[in-house]
Image 1 (cartoon, rainbow, N blue to C red):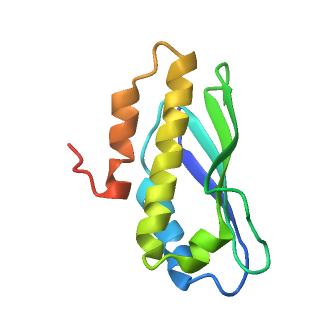
Image 2 (image 1 turned 30 degrees about the vertical axis):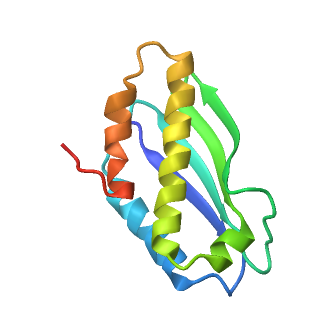
Image 3 (image 1 turned 90 degrees about the vertical axis):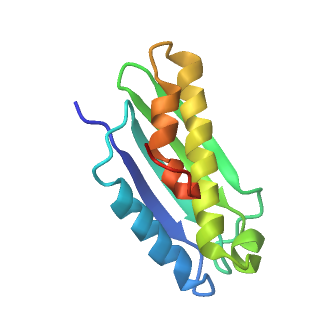
Length: 132
């Protein structure tokens, strides 16, 4: 069975820089054929002026389902971080990378057969690390 990393997303208003929309689409496209050991079902919330996120940027509600080989979580981005960052592309990529590597660690804590290094390498491109 093929496991994938998928995003559903909500953007919090018209003041969010267009770069966030474009870059999340680019990331989805780059991951479309990458096979993972688990399915990642992620809900990305990009805070803005209408849907305000005041909690810190990061992972919320992670759940690992060993039998289904699935992990679910929310990745929230604080509205002030989103609207005030001078590098939206870098902020989004760093946030997604940090969240996915955190989720990979959560899976590894529960599944002794999970290959952490292989999975981390699959998302290394998000922060410019070389793929090899």
